[in-house]
Length: 449
Image 1 (cartoon, rainbow, N blue to C red):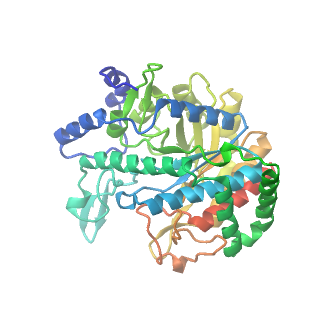
Image 2 (image 1 turned 30 degrees about the vertical axis):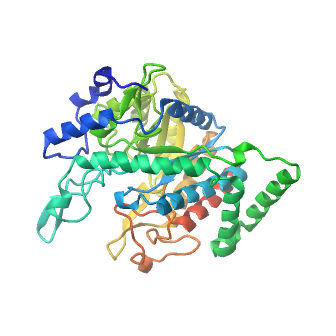
Image 3 (image 1 turned 180 degrees about the vertical axis):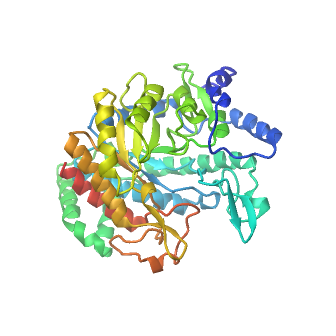
C-alpha cells in the first residue's frame, strides 16, 4: 500500500458534486486538520483482502455461495468491549454454520462491524420540549445526549471512529484465527441454543444431522484446517465522505484506489443519487460495493447504477441489497431482477428484511415484527425461485446480546417487553435467539430452492 499525492485527484472527484447526509461541521479548519491526520494513518484493511472478498462475492453472484451480512444498526464508541464484539461474532458464526450445513453451500461472512458508526437521518434537526438541536448522526459525528455540546458535530470523532474500528478489527482477527471460531466449538454453541431455547427444539433434527456429520469426519480422521479458522470480512455504509476519502489509498501492486476503512462499503437508500457524490466516490474505488434499493427503485435506476459502478460486468463487484418491506417485496422485486438479469450483469442479490419493516410501538419505541422480517425473506426467496435466479444472501441488523428491540421470535418478545433491554442508539436489532431462529428458517428456505 502506498499513500501519495495522486490520491487527491482520483479519490476526491466527489467533492464537486452534491453530497447528501453530510454533517454540518462548524469548524472547517479543524476538519481539514483531522483529514490530514487520517490520511497519514495506516490502512485498516488491505487491498488483497478486498480482492479476495470480491472473488468470494463473485461465487455468490454465480449462484455458488450465500452471503451472510450482519451486525449493529450503528456501532457505539462505548461498546468496543471484548464481550460485545465476541457476542456479535459468535452469533454470526453460529448463523453461518447453520446456513452452510443446511443449505450445503459456502457462506461468505461479512460483519456490519468496525466502521458502522455513521447513520443517515430523515431530518437534520430534532425538537424536544421546544428545543431544536442537530439530529444524532452516529458516534462518528456527534453524541446521543440531547444537549448542544453533544449534538454539535465534532471532526475529532472521525479519529475516534478510526481507533475504535482498528481495535474491533484487531479482536475480530484474533478470534477468527485463534481457535475461537473452530467449527466444533460453533456447533457446540448451536447445540446449547437448541437445548435451552424454547424455539430451539424446532431445530433439533438439523442439529443432530450436523452432529452425525461431524462424528463421521472425526471417525475418518478428517481434521481440515478450514474447521479451525474462518474468513470474516468487515463492511459499513460509506456515509461520511470526508472520512472515507481520507482512508482511500493507491494500491502499490496495481495502481488502483481502495477504500481501506473496510473490505466492502455500501451506499444507502438516501445517498444513491445517480448524479451525487456517493456514487461518484464508489465508482473510483476497487472494493466490492453494495447499494441499498428501496421500493421506489426503478429498473432504469438499477441499470444506471450497474453502468456507473460495474461497467466491466465483473461478478462480485456489485451487490444490490433490497429493502422493500414485507408488503412490497413480491410486487417490486420481480421487475428489477428480470431487467438486471436480461442486461447480462451478474450482481449479488441480497435481502435486507429490516429497514422496510420498522414501525413505532405505542410506547414510542421504534421496533420491527420478527414475522415481517421473516415474511420479507420468504418473499425474496419466492421471487428468485419463480425467476430461476439466485437468492444471494441476507443483510440483517443484529446483536449477540439478549436485547428486547424487535417483537416476536421463538422466545417471544411482546410490545410491553420492549422497555426491558432497549439498547440501540438508532434502529431495533434482532437479538441472538431471533437471529438464530432466522438462520434456521432461511436454511430451510434455501434447501427448498
